[in-house]
Image (cartoon, rainbow, N blue to C red; front, side, top):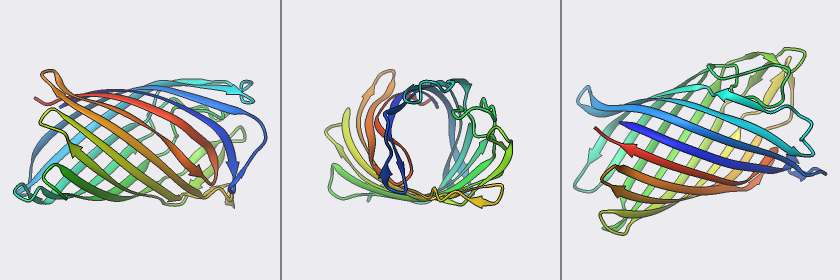
Length: 251
């Protein structure tokens, strides 16, 4: 499998502990992702693995326009997923996936914006998908991500640690016919408070966002167009919009 994706997103209003801060900050991310994957059998279970490498740029604007931007490679992510239960007759599938993200991305301690995170991250995800009606499918998933220490955070190069970051998601997909499908997904992310030099930053994540997807199967592969953004965030920049175009081809 090979997948090529392009993502463009804008972040705007800054929130601190649920309060909107003054000013008009803006950060635009433009990113291309290459994903190489393969399906196989693992212990009698269907399995899938991939390696993903992003490259892109971050451009600050508005009240953040004085900050330097960033460009280059992002961190490399690898996935191994297995399906302990896969019932094609009822279209019910239960999957478990493990992620490993390596700090291969461009990073400079003195910059506020970076393409890389300068730390190793691991995540575990469980997901369930089943048919509600003949053409309507429901999915749900929960994951937890644990990150290692960034030993060069900020201009003083202090150590930054982060608590486990959790995400739950649920969504529906409607198959219009064998060629076209539509989907809608809701995400809730929480946790992930950081510590810098052992001092809690009171920046716990509490984020709600959505994603709408249109899917088309074509002779060259599966094409998907996604649009989404944040409903609300407790801390950080609110993502106003996100566009993603993906082309996936299986061999």
